[in-house]
Image (tube, rainbow, N blue to C red; front, side):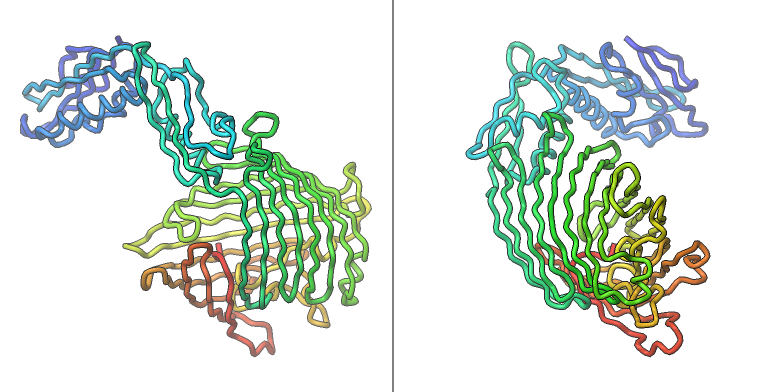
Length: 505
């Protein structure tokens, strides 16, 4: 049995006590000490944290009831399903003393796991999501974790988990599920201020070979790009919690200053990390053909390029909503090396990072801040960074008021040159208007360039404005009106409408 004395002021008379002197207080209106006795298997510090009552807080009769319930709930969550807690109080000069007496009883262990409701999905898909085995000490939170992971697979409409006790002092687990359809055909149509009309067709299978493998075939077409790709995902690579992805695709783009076609193959291994972080190691090979180049861009970009690269990517997502978060953060940091011992004709390294934070400010007014930075630099045989590997800024997702990629430097023919460095940031105030209709006011800025002096805030391009967001069941539709705060000399187009899907950040 453990003993803990956190403060003096009373005579310690039981197994564990924490107390605080309360000068000048009424002895029956203030809680001066909480004593826990009878615990032998759980540490006193953990029990103290489980009980909301604490010395120095106001006292009433409900404090004892809430404290008993807090302690009993904690014991049962830790596997002591037969535990009981009683309380008694004593009036002392310093205030009320609350004693919680625990009868722990035996600690239960996990029993067998049964699964019901499966039709097309194999039982092992459910069982491998459990991070406990029969015989492990029972902890209720592991059932909540299992339920969350099963929902995250995207394979089930309903998941419920129950535990029943047996004479063998074990908790037998029953997982009830209702499967979602695993084969999908999705068609989408949209309109954006840059790409204009856009069509998307997707074919996906979420339970390939009854092993929860995912295969997706996707096609996108708009006025400025055409894209085809296939992606395969194994959620449990080699029986571990490592996620393996393989991707192949082809993309054609028509940009200001050049056109390009790129064929790509990539493979990655990813893993969920603590504190809402995810890490991924990726290899990528890409062959790019560039044509219709403006003369200035042609000086730095060969028509044929082969890039063989490896990179490490970390992402963090603690936002409480995918589309309109009121708290939390999203962050991404990446490092990539192309060429060198990996081969290819493009030799460079790249570092980039981006982060957004969200906070409810007043009632339903939400503030959001975003910042980004990056650098890419040629190495070895490469004398310049090709245009399709550079950073660009401007448009609906960076500096609104400017067209896509339009806030950076241009060549003599108006083609966008991009830069080896990028810096930018901005903020939004978001608030609801009516049901699914929301509004936002924003201000942001940024710049790209070849040297650090070119991307300092004094040389940023800035934009500000407001817009509307319509929350649809799939993705928000966004309409923004942006104004250039410091346009280039002779630029008379100060206002720009941005129509897009999804969030700005």
